[in-house]
Picture 1: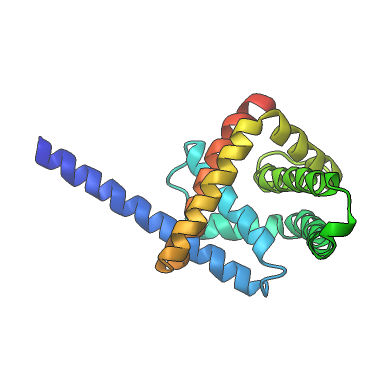
Picture 2: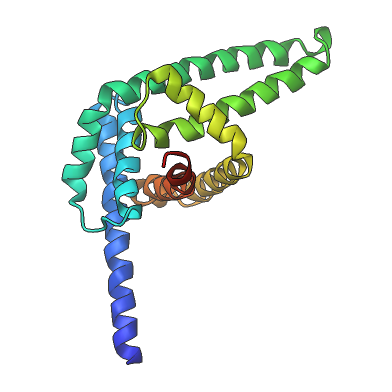
Length: 203
């Protein structure tokens, strides 16, 4: 009995390890297919789309065809949201450079306001991409939804931030993880936590 249980458990571990590795490789490959700048956002949406199906109970989907389907369907939409967020992020970077180079010339309250707005920005980023594959809305409405949900579920937002940071930090210590597991694990953590909220919000 114990031998059968161990064999079954090891088989499941092997299957899911293979699935996560394949998803990670697909994310990297489709990001490169889109030359990075056009591929990273739809590839992220596609990875989240695959994981969402797993979490919704459809564990036997064909990963390649599902990933490719979501990538194509969300290519334009994901890039619109992604590039809006990227531009906003770049503006934050420029403001950070200005604040850093003129700390003695600005009011002490300015950095606090800046970091507060930066936190709201990361909140929007965290919730916008899972929303792409769960609930369709106009781009502006989707960004509003992301911010509202992120603030109202601030404990989950902070948890996701910490887990993402920890995963990336650990992966940088062991770079081989970046090739096979980092991005698929991030997608799994990301979608698992956000989906628990979505099923209640979008009933």
